[in-house]
Amino acid sequence: MDPRLSSRIADATARAYGRAVTTLPPDVETALERALVSETDPVARGELENILENVALARKGNLPICQDTGVPVIYVTLPPTVPLEDGLFDAIAAGVRRATTEVPLRPNVVDPLTRHNTGDNTGDGMPAVHIRPGPRLSVTVLPKGAGAENMSRIEMLLPSEVERIPDVVVRCVLEAGARPCPPVVLGIGIGGTFDVAAALAKEALLEPIDTMDPFETSLCDAVNRLGIGPMGLGGATTALAVKVRRAHCHTASLPVAVNIQCWANRHATEYVEVDG
Amino acid sequence: MTDLATPLGTEVLELVAGDRVTLSGIVYTARDEAHLRMMREGIPFDPVGAAVYHCGPVIADGRVVAAGPTTSSRMNRLSGFLLDAGVRALIGKGGMDATVTGQLRGRGVYLAFTGGCAALAAARMRLEGVWFPDLGMAEAVWAIRLDRLPLVVGIDSHGANLFAGVQARAERAAKLP
Image (cartoon, rainbow over all chains, first blue to last red):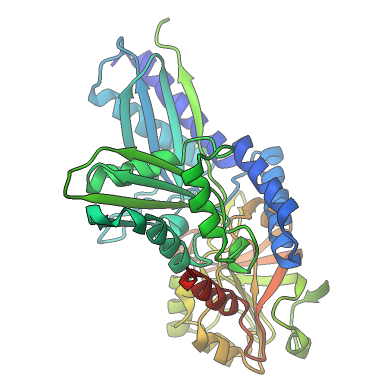
């Protein structure tokens, strides 16, 4: 890869990472403000006030919103003029390492068995990079914290169990309780295969949360009837939004993946000039 | 809103689950590894009236950059020795189990801080010292001075656990048609 392009991709990755962990997307902040308006419980209101003050302080001070700056999940769109080659992955990893020292990020990436920390948020298969064609070269960073990720679930339902999908979603949030830092955002992947459903669920978290279709709204309402509330201390807002993505699947299967995201539904996109 | 300051005394026994409080004074961060080390080698700070904060902060240039709470339930089996030694408050997110609720009876409280609020926390903190730095940034014990950190009494010293009550109601709601 052209070293100048490689350097620009690393820059864009580091910039997107820095922006993602310090500046909450406006649709997420608006959803939190709306939740504060609808909550009457003083404890729930206090939690949301803390969150909104925290979001404002982080943005103003260019500070991480949360000390769990996550692991790097990265989505790239590649225009026809840029070949898909190893250098692209190397450039993205270089951007992650730079963000780790410059932002700074907490070094979170470890060997799964020895638990040895690599110290720079990269390692085998990390960052997780997802690439698809697109009109421009873009790098989207979705830093994923462990508290919410650990409570995510996938179920392989029977084709006759379509009606059980809301129950799978509600059970997942119920079992998670306070641990994923509610109010959460839920990414749901329905269909595909075991792996595709999980990937769809995570990608759904990138969609704007200020609109939901009727199915998403019904899932969100069902979750909010649990009353778990902000931080599991009780209240009307357990989920800020539910976003669903679907894929066709085998006639004999119905995978359903629920990827829980904490209230800090962090993500940011940077574009890279390919010419010049 | 009740204003608390460390070292804590019997005033914490008056608190009731659901009360909103602020905490000032020194707290000590500790996660899994620090608890295990303290169980083996002893508590490096004076535990009487102390507050232990479940937190793995980001520290840079002698300053607290980000310091929100971590999930307290990981310390469910690791907290008894602290309360036996005189610790009066455990601080974290997500609540703790019936064992800890029992250990807090007549002795101390669990205080919930809003998960993810690392910048808000850092704005009200000053770094004072560190023990066990070899455990790494997230797992070391950091001594941090708080200035009115806003907290909620999640578990009181009379056995009331706000999280458990909310979860029990959610279980019942999930069973409704």
